[in-house]
Amino acid sequence: MKQLLVRFISEEEGQDLIEYALLAAIIALGATVGMIALAGGINTKFNDISTTLGTAS
Image 1: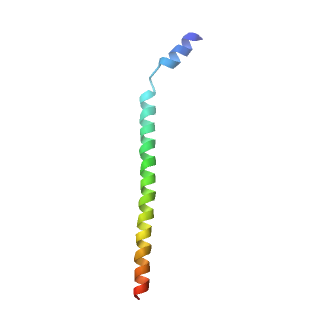
Image 2: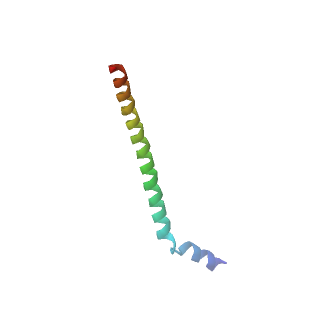
Image 3: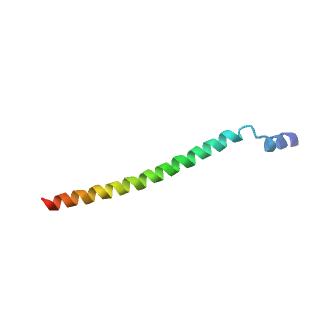
């Protein structure tokens, strides 16, 4: 049992895959947050343009 526990702790076979998955998740999260912020800014600009065009008529 002790050998199994030692082997489980010291084995690094799947470590690279987990690191790449975590990196991909962090990049996806950052992209999502950035897109939400960008969408909010674009929406604000379109509302400003709509208001300007509405008052110009």
